[in-house]
Length: 465
Image 1: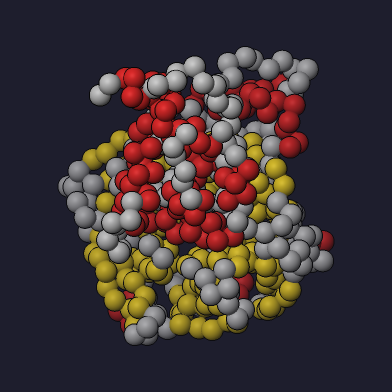
Image 2: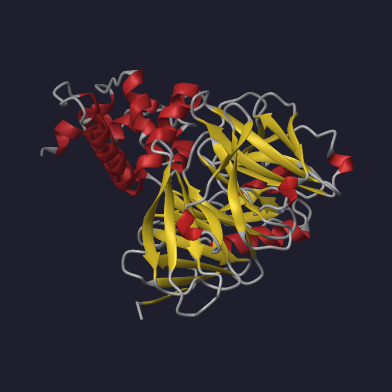
């Protein structure tokens, strides 16, 4: 093609933040996004291909600048179409693009965009996220591809609460046992401090769990206060800044760790506090905030049991209680519409000892402890051991999407208290921050983060035996 046609006026200047310039760079994508002949139902796949094109072109924009100068003046993408394109991009890419213009900045804060982007991210950009503790009020979030288990990225998480709930729509609840908690988004680096409960001073320690109610699009935090002779359950809806007590119970002292699946919370009720045998499942519906009980399948009674979330459904891992190395475990899945349990899979190899059951994703079952993550592929029976980087300990692990939730008022910038060394976090910065602007401890953590950005975790695999 004649370069003169592509660039008739190469010296015409443009503002660095002019959105026309960014859109012109992506002119092949915008043509796809707005062409009227798209068959109904094909819009998501076209927009997805558009987002992939954008990512592929991101590193080549300098070479395309001259070619796109002439095109810029002709590009006029409707704002609705711009929003659709942005909604199909990974969250960390949109975070960078929101500085281009006011519309893009406002777009990512609009509740309808947040919902649309979350839906697309859950379908096309799901990851495995591992949160590990560092010192000096920082943590790491490592992400992996759920299909290949290849390392993807590492991010700093600004929180001095060294306990974390499982991820929920790109959010985590970070807390300490003293009752201080906050909901934070590692991608946007925004957080919302939760109100202090009146039960804080009366509790031995408190745990926090984060769930999402689809019918009302509300995020709810469940606080479980451990007291001397009973537990107290409180719920706070994100954005209300208040707690309400939903139950006090001595019976629930005899339960396993809770698992949240969609808009419900589940525990295994034990026969007694010293027993490992379970008699039924307790459920807390986050929609109406009521408790109910669910029967276990007859086939698993007398077995060691564990609840686990997987692909938005409740699963049950059943292992014979005799602990034989040749024992066969079973995975059951709940079918709530039919009010029954179905056997999903048989695990012929021994379940790892001394590891907690985490979650199921892409037919892989994950276990872990502070220094290691264990993954078994249920399809080909291969096993992966992922060692946590030295000096770090695993806080939480689960499926993760890069989202802009929650769309509520009162969110604060998580890096505000670290503004004196915020420039150290930018990818383009290569200067070392002195102790006058960064505390020595913070500086060490930041330098460590830089060294691990391109790090691949030690992953060892072995095939079926």
